Length: 102
Image (cartoon, rainbow, N blue to C red; front, side, top):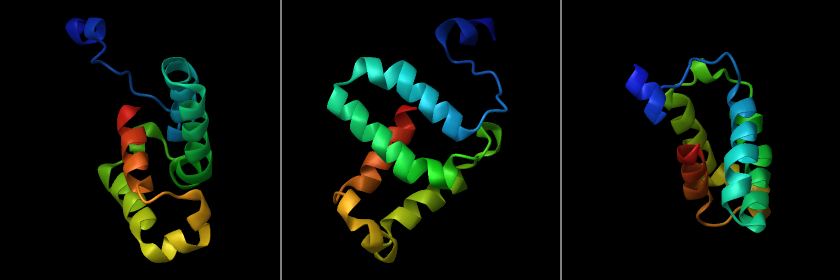
């Protein structure tokens, strides 16, 4: 366990939400390691699409199925039509890359 702590592989269980985690991750990691335009795009995507669906879930309670359900909903054409202006053809990939990075 000490080795995991020293190498950053150990993560203490948190009672926080995925929304709190994503915002903190954006502020502490993404903001300082990407261009301003990339950061602004990721903040927009997080606030507009991820937080409304997943933001209130507790980190310790989130399951792979929750993430898959989110991806599936975003992929379905009928869900994309009302908000088509804020999507690119690769948006589901952007969501996946964004969540995997966190």
